[in-house]
Length: 347
Image 1 (cartoon, rainbow, N blue to C red):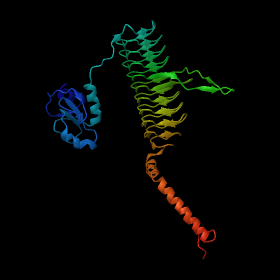
Image 2: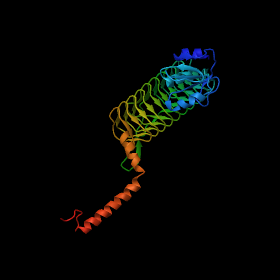
Image 3: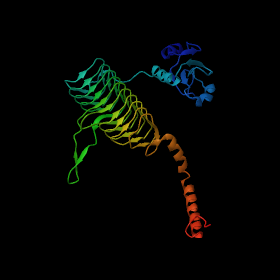
Image 4: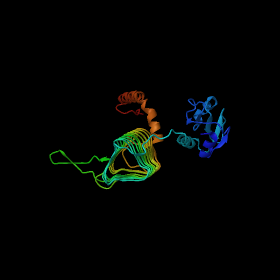
């Protein structure tokens, strides 16, 4: 692709030769001839002068020793450039002879089914959706158009996916929620988990993430949510629109997560609570109570991020502070002993 063609795709202003051919995007230091790089953070501005890239994506200001694609949002433009220059897809087109497709399954136009994939009875696969090798689509499941279901994914019976959903390798949608009733003798009786999981349009789920089905109601992931690898979402949870969950987040059952929420890695959320719209939680935060919209929290239990930062500074000083406290207690005891049991001098 030429730089002129890429500039048109990105809606960028090109400063430099438009006939230069580029093949991929790369970081500032790794980029070479034929690569497009980008600067999205001022922290890396000092590396621009040394780049060997053929072009760089920049904002309205700054110069570079190569052609410049000027845009309002360099990071967003980088994402779009990466998509434009991505290698051709190797996902299947058509139905592989080894795939097992139920006689009453419905396949839309242009569907691709990979080797040894299984599509169960009554399942519906939307137009142009790809089901890769060894994926299993359960009976009665519905998958919308333009979805990508990578290898070894399981979409269990009666679960529903909207349009343009992406499931990375090993995702499990609709495994049984963790529900058991205690019997009088102390053993546990399983509560049948038969309700569906619903993923709305433009959801992406990372590798080996699990989203469980509930006994009643539904588990729902709303439109545009993006979920990283190794995340556990329990039965009956609702994840709001455009919410971002980083790796190893765990959310207990029947919790509601609002729209535009952002959780760092390994955030844990208790069950039966509500996290308001726009809440942000740093990595390893433990959320044990409901949170109002717009909060920025850290720590366990979760507190305001600014307060947590102040408190965390003191953690390293705790041994010193303990020594000082013991010294003060000894001095106080000595003063009390010297003044007849009272630290206040007798007039």
